[in-house]
Length: 350
Ligand SMILES: Nc1ncnc2c1ncn2[C@@H]1O[C@H](COP(=O)(O)OP(=O)(O)OP(=O)(O)O)[C@@H](O)[C@H]1O
Ligand code: SF4
Ligand SMILES: [Mg+2]
Image (cartoon, rainbow, N blue to C red; front, side, top):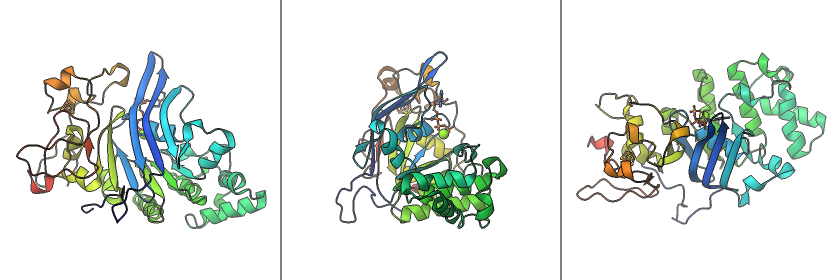
């Protein structure tokens, strides 16, 4: 990880066009005692050939953002906002047009590889279905294409195509999912915890694959708890907390000059991030979304809270204000939702 270039501009500094633009996305689930607002106004831009990481503790709303983008939320969810893929509204796409984008142009790696596969269909049928639907191959050609898609990942591809998902190990299921995600050369890969619960070899393979996709120009929305994965792969990072984006910056800035007390808290609890500092587990728990008020969602846990945090509605995501007397720079694209942000430079130990 080095002081990064800005993936939102070309090398000549011209603005680039995002391939995916999400604005004011809101997703709420009908629960037994009312609506649970899991995503509360998330906006993001994803650019070709970049890895944008969504990080944050459990229940921050990361998977809900991913599933809403692909129209895969369960029927008890309500979604509003705008999701534009190459200028077309994904929320308005129906039928064939939606299927063409989903799986073909935007592929997803699910948090649980096994759950991403249909249990009653043989592996080969599931991959062949992609070729049947998107490339209009006949059944024989689609099966042959499925075997070819599996072969680089699983040498015994001829045998695996006839297996059911329950016959696969976790690592094999992950490889099948990677084969499905790669098959149609998608322009976007959404990877939700792609390295969770994998043995080190499959984890490394998955990271290498994501890197290769990115290097070939695919945009990657990477959801992860693992800051090692963020440091290795991400160009930009969005830190989510309680259904909102708390902070956004290039990866170098997030690790070195975090502004949001939550980001700082996450980093303080990780080994090897803050040179010489004691590991400090973050106190408290994520908020109860069902009862969350208008105030900053991090208020109960925040060591930097000031009076304003208790009386004003949650602050919007905005460029941090310059701090008088501080020479800690503000990177292009750095935004934070906080009334009293940190001003730190971790490499300098300030
Ligand atoms: N199908 C559902 N019905 C009701 N509530 C849900 C449903 N799916 C998610 N939620 C709730 O929405 C909130 C956000 O969940 P989400 O899965 O998006 O979080 P996450 O950041 O991906 O968490 P994790 O890191 O644990 O995967 C949580 O409070 C969760 O309980
Ligand atoms: S707005 Fe206030 S409570 Fe929220 S993170 Fe910033 S300082 Fe803490
Ligand atoms: Mg999740």
